[in-house]
Image 1 (cartoon, rainbow, N blue to C red):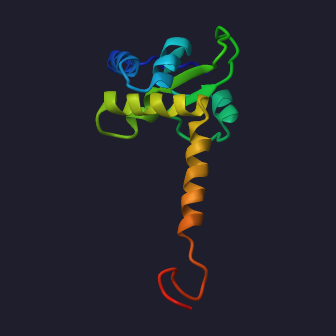
Image 2 (cartoon, rainbow, N blue to C red; image 1 turned 135 degrees about the vertical axis):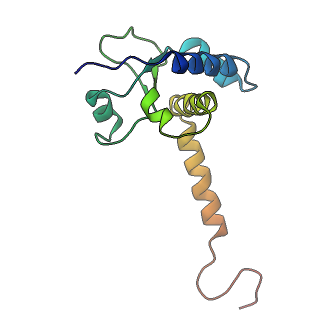
Image 3 (cartoon, rainbow, N blue to C red; image 1 turned 90 degrees about the vertical axis):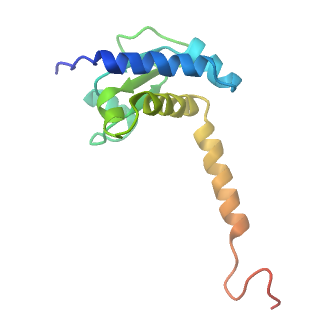
Length: 137
């Protein structure tokens, strides 16, 4: 299967997203953009989609430990996919930056931390059947 080349506009959006990440207040984001290779592709390959866990999904990006034919990197690799990011509509640079941060979040395991926080908040808001916390009995 031949990969479609990314557009100049998308490459510019990727470069602007990287520049924004380098200027981010979050030290972890600045670390990630300095040490994790970022690649732009038009779309995920079928093998990438399988590795990502959904062969029929439209991927916007992918963080993965390593990938055949790409140089090994100690903190993994990030792929940004033009077709998926464009499918969001809206500002291409803003969406590319958002996907870049999202993939960095996977590498930093922030998605797991946020999920745990959401679960704790939901548990704290749970009211057993039979009354509200503010009401007696």
